[in-house]
Length: 196
Image 1 (cartoon, rainbow, N blue to C red):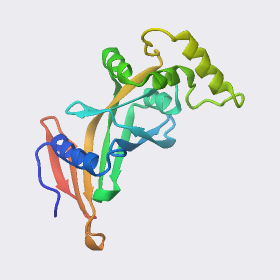
Image 2 (cartoon, rainbow, N blue to C red):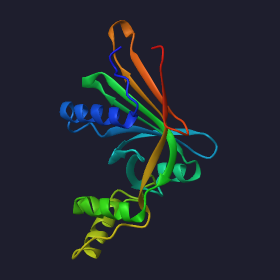
Image 3 (cartoon, rainbow, N blue to C red):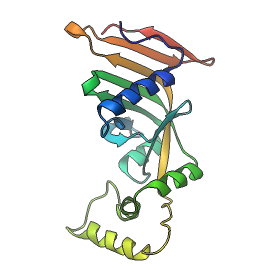
C-alpha cells in the first residue's frame, strides 16, 4: 500500500495535484466530467479544474450547453482525474451547485480577452447553421466590446461539485492497484481500502 492514510481527502488531493502539476503542467487540471440528464442518460466530456478546496471542485462553462442543462436538471456529477505519468487517478462524486455571481465574475475577469469574446460568441453544444457562423459571431462581439471591460454573460457560470465520495487510485505491480476511498459523513470522512 503506497497511498498514505489521511483524515482529510482534500489535503491528499492537494498533494497529488501539486505533483501532477510538476509532472504534467499543461494537463494536470484536465478531468472527465460525467453528468446525466433528467432521464438518467449519461454523458461525459473533459473540463478544466479551476479551484479545489474544502467546499468542492469548481469548473466554468456555458450553462446553456448540454452539460449545463444536465447539471441544472440533475445536480449530481462525477469527475475523474488521470495523471498517466504518475500512474494515479482520483474520482470525485457529489452534488452540484452554481458558484456565486461574484466568484464567476472574478474568474471571468482573469480570462484572456479572446476567451471572453468566445464565451459570448459560442452557442455551446448547438448546431452551427453555416461554415462561417462562429466567425461572424466572433467579429460581432469583438466589435461590440472593442473598448473597455468585457462583462460576463449571464449564461456563463461556474459549477461546484461538493464531494460525497473521493477515491484515490495508484497503479501497482501485477494490477494489484492501491485504492483508498473517502465517504463524507455528518461529522467528517470515513475511509476504506478497496480491492483492486
